[in-house]
Image 1 (cartoon, helix red, strand yellow):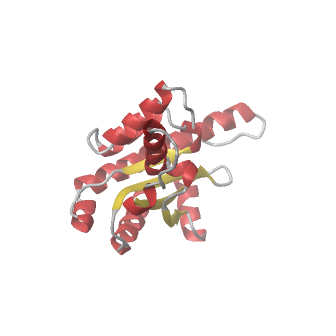
Image 2: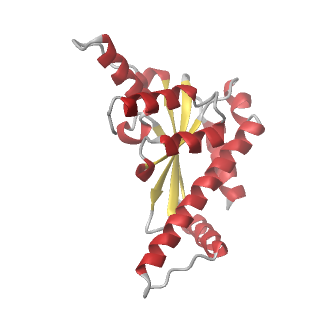
Image 3: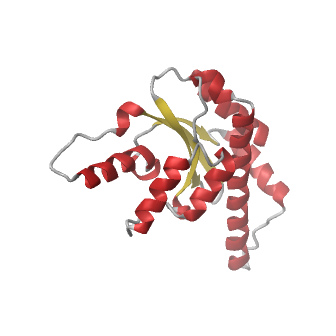
Length: 192
């Protein structure tokens, strides 16, 4: 599954021609109790709000939210879904089977625990793919610079866990601004 998903991500990235791409997103979600992911990107043009009557701090908060809160604001161009057909759905099923985490209908708690382990394994798989993409300089070849590929997952929200996951995947330098934004909103009690 890893090779197939990585190839699909790379093919999609290499098909983009829009200017101003500054971050990519892998949005993870639940598709009938199996993990799935959507790849998208955001551009500089789409992350600047119109200035109103708000204070400088409020304006900067709004600008950073548009810039980094891809999950809730959808300011990105969604480009790829995985799985997106019967073949890729079967790849996911076989990957899950290989994890040997079966669901016993008589033990709903074990099913829930196993599903959480499957989901966590999927997040780690995505982080590994992102690391390989950076190591192979796929983004530098396409855009002339490395860009963060941010992994979002609704249940993680914008807490320290999402910073850790993305730092593991991208390295500290590429996610510095994203991590500062999350730590800033959490320190002020702004929970998204």
